[in-house]
Length: 547
Ligand code: GLU
Image 1 (tube, protein in one colour):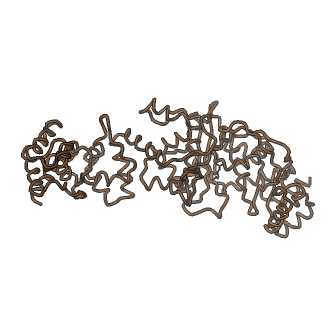
Image 2 (tube, helix red, strand yellow):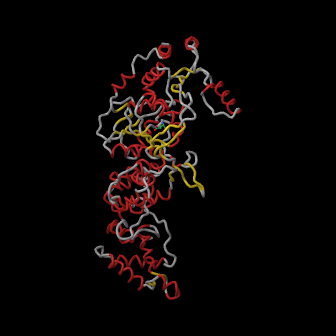
Image 3 (tube, helix red, strand yellow):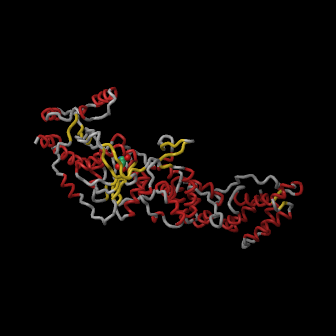
């Protein structure tokens, strides 16, 4: 009776019953074994690798099983929220190829288990909170920040556990009349859970990654609703994951310590617990020591970083999968050309201790991934990136897509393909010489070749050039020119007896290389000439005659 009165006093505006929501959000009726998963990012304006890591776990668990993966915006902490943060989450996830079946979208919600923004679910949480009050399992607490700080001081000096429990829970048994007076006076209060847990007890929780955990039961009267009536993460996610019929909660291991609270709530409501999957914290090596990736020190923690630097999302997926599942690399070796989606991702292959994020390894994997990617696809991805990040080079690069695609493909076949492409940021550096607009001499001509010889080499090269020649014939002609002009055919010979030669074949071929590319280092110049085409290639060598 008292409890019902209290519930009405605290929640006079709540006229619905939990059964209303149970009916509104019925079990999903998916096929046996289909998982329902989600990510629940807070809109803080910083989307990090951990968000993507958990998103991949959730996405795989759902989509591999024919289930549902959704996005829920956990915006209960208005103080941390920044403008545009939801858009940022959505665009980052889209960029990384994470697709949601339902959830928050730019201008609202998509799906029938919404709203998917927690602040819009206030009434739902309050409805369930009201039920807890009716059951005598929740009560208002009027303790101020100062009182709580003071309590903490005392607990420290007495070497006791912190928190709101036992005799410290001073608002636990306030008489109804006093509560009524204080509420009517407009005093601020939070709503606390009345825990019957015991510090001596343990509770068993199955974790999808860690197996069965034995944790200390929660004995604290934690906060369900804050003084503005908005729930804490603990309460909100339990209500949401139940009503949205989540089967697996993949989230960071920082939530392990409060897991006893979460299972206590599930058990109190008599709801089936989801399978919690606590993913390991992302670490990096800093010299000899391992440490957590930090927002302040490590730009690579932010997802934005990969976009700005032009890393292919496919490479991030590939790398994160190697970190996530210990058998992925072996699978990839056996299935080099199979799309990553075909890999059977498994929770029991996940490690539960700090996952090491190694930028060097990531870049190696990125090289491999790009080498397997057809040049046409690289062209499209590069163009999309350049459009946003290098508007000057973008029109040059996209003027002739076929030409740029061929340029990208130079040196990528054969036994020893080049593996230097790591990200789209390198586009200009690697390709600028192909285009007349961006071609320039970046390296000096070889010292061993004087100006007269340089011209002579160019002249003879053009005189003997037959663009239809195959590579061997073409090279033979270069060798003939070198030999005839007094350059050693083997660099070693020249090194041994420098007085006998003007230089070596390398000097001669470098004259042509620099004429064609402006650089002393470049991929195979025969291949490059094929891409440049007869006219452009000849004109560049011709330029040596007139400079
Ligand atoms: N809002 C929580 C966070 O950003 C989500 C944790 C969860 O996925 O349950 O850490």
